[in-house]
Image (cartoon, rainbow, N blue to C red; front, side, top):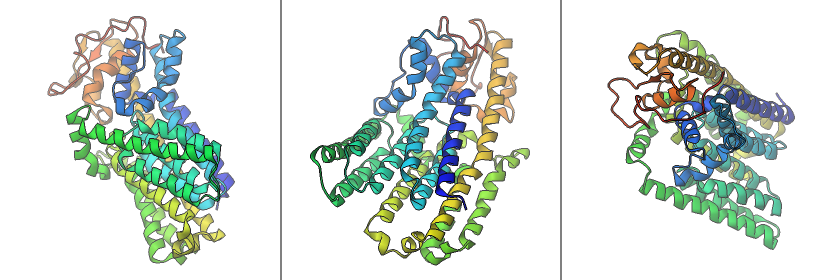
Length: 449
């Protein structure tokens, strides 16, 4: 079984290694990211079109905006920097959560489970602000349940991330009040309440509640009624994301077994059965050899984002119960505090993280191939290019195509003004940023290899 130090350092290394690799390969351009990059180059300013998610948008775009202000016109460099900003924010937040939990095997396992079940299985769509929202919630919960007393530094951290979370994503409609309640619990149980530290904690609670209000407003007055309807309609389609399914199933086996027979956590039986799902997860890229949709799919990660929020909320409640008065009364926690059980629990969470690596690597490799193919098409065919006449209309590239974004991705990848623009499929009749025959003029901004 890995020690807490090995598990912590390895997980942090993997998180940042993946973030840097994904950024280098411009994975932030997937779907909406391409439109973000084009709009940033076109406006030469932040693309901040949606107020309820404003703060997460702006923070993630800081690296690319710094390059733009310094005179960069290479869209390839800007794509990498946009990707870096999008990946670095949640990665840094999860890193801080791991750092805070590293001395407690059970809490460290809980944070690693959040990374394995949620972040690694839903972050291919990294431009989605939910990635930041879930990381904020995890970090806030860890800091609160591990705080022995109220400190100014903890208060400042909580105030900062609660401010960021105030305009990040709609899931704050329930994560906001949950975290505010956790803050009040921490204040109530504190042995003393210094004025400044207490004030900062209460400010953070108020900001999390403000995030709930913003989230409610975004649902009552959505940016797009069609988008809201699609989100509701796809919320129950999380099962289409097999990475999320296998990781969650493995976690549920251990959780249910622990509730029914807590002493089993002292042995290996629950983990052996749960490991069957991790084996399927680790070997899932092999399924791509068949001509079916039962395989890791980049676009399926987006549909699991809503269910992922409930997983984060459950993990937060688990951490609270573990560090509250329930710890001495619930049999499962009585067992988990024993060193042997805690080590096995941590070891399994560590295996969950490792099991997600092959599918992440596979999907990133398919993205690299897809981006190369789109760039080749755009550079070799001028004018408007019919989607049906390109390799994108066939597997495996078809699995990464989002019709409305094809013109924006084409424009971002052009090496010169006269390069082609791929049109959406002929039967596509929904909104797109611009007509393929009339692309935005980006001036000196082009993709340089």
